[in-house]
Image (cartoon, rainbow, N blue to C red; front, side, top):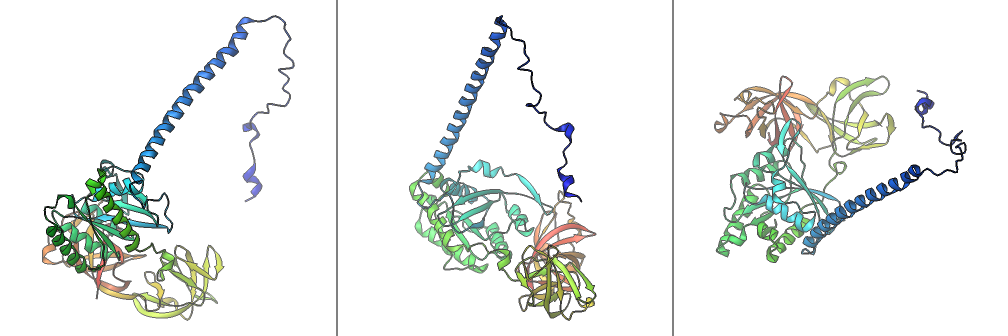
Length: 468
């Protein structure tokens, strides 16, 4: 393409030249007779202009005043906290609020924004808009707040099933979680479900906010509930003794009660210190799903794909994992963005040449991984969500010994499902545990996510909870 063509202008569409051959002013007839009507036009236009300008100025400064008042109100609420900062220093961390419905997730989220960000009231959070990602409908509300140490993005979900959908579908990838438990009820069924799911998707650490402590009639009862929580989080793989549990009352903090505002400060201090920093995809173990395989004469076997996590360099020794026997090889050439390169990282689409590998020894669906970091399995247990009717799901397909396709990264793998007796009767929108036996082995680990498909249609999502 000729680059000059990109800058051609249509002369017919050019703005008219107001300076050339414009003698209209000089050529006006000079008339000494004053026309009173003409003289009145200018003052009228000037008056109209002044009126419009005055109205605009009033509107501007009124709006500015309201915004300033709002900003001052937010600032005033934040001055109650000694740790609020308009901008964190260490980067972004993503959190989710989990816990039983009506245990106070939303009041707590609102209270955090009141003292650490731009205040969002409970009603606004409760009226979260439904969105769709990866074929799954769920409701959530996102808030941002900052401490002196970090900036946070937090998700609040109205219901248990919204949390399950968002986490299983990979729509949300949190670095940590705030578990909210009411002192009045203690841990409930949804508390257990969400703790299990948090661990399954790879959350390493949580902070607990023990809510409604203002309503406790006996300190010994609070101690008892805290002890129960510690036993529960230990059961699901979290640190029993070191996990921070903050006692407080989100509703009283919202009312401005100093004692409970301090509980929000303690909570955010605990989050700063206990929840790990976000780990960039490029800093994780290498994972490169293979999308296509071909042979270049004189070069050898070539694979293409997008690096999911980690980095690669020329002459790196790696493993090909999945479907067939695991094989070691060396990367002899890397091309990204259609140019030769010495290295590539997460997010890059690459073409790489593998040393001493035949075309028939590698296939789509396998992965390139760091040596010893990943294994292939054909049997696994999973926590799955079955699409509801709105999401075009079909619960009738989930019957014991039925054959379905399990989509891992780049391709489908046929497999047979095994249901326990308690899961024999399944309805659309259920989330359940099941076992799967695949026809071929797949590279996977605990926390690996997948889609469930039938005849090219996605009918569920899941996460690997156990391999065998």
